[in-house]
Image (tube, rainbow, N blue to C red; front, side, top):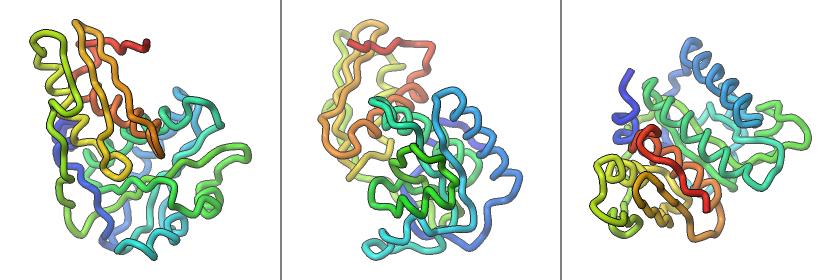
Length: 225
């Protein structure tokens, strides 16, 4: 298994997959992690294998191949639901990469009815998207990225952990690849925000996870002002 740092560097969006099924032992590891995250963060995420029903709609607009496995991102509706799903989805996406799988985060343009049915999502839960998983025909290509100075500022000389955290955020998936973040560091405190818009709260959760993975949670605290 590769390290999380390698997973951050190597993860790219992949939409075309081989027919190779996800082995039972790997699916079991992902399901166990989903179970842990659901319990810790109050979510209802599920892994679906052998079905592409949830993204049948989007295939009319982008080229896909053998999309047959995905994680349904769902939970009881709350103000911070999207952020929690973004954070936990990032955890699962990077875990999948560490296990040798490729992925594709698909937001609002999914068949939520099919996702609810195939994922056995409880009534009363909201679905924000899915994460497609599988063995890619390719490993994908890096997305166009902003520069660190475009999104981040540290008051004083930026420590190594802050630089690494920002670098990880720039490699994270975001809606329409906007990378619409503002990250501010002051001593051990870090503040991160987004410019708003569709998927902004999901993007915020993803960015927080990637920053923590890059910087090391032991090196800083979130400034939640």
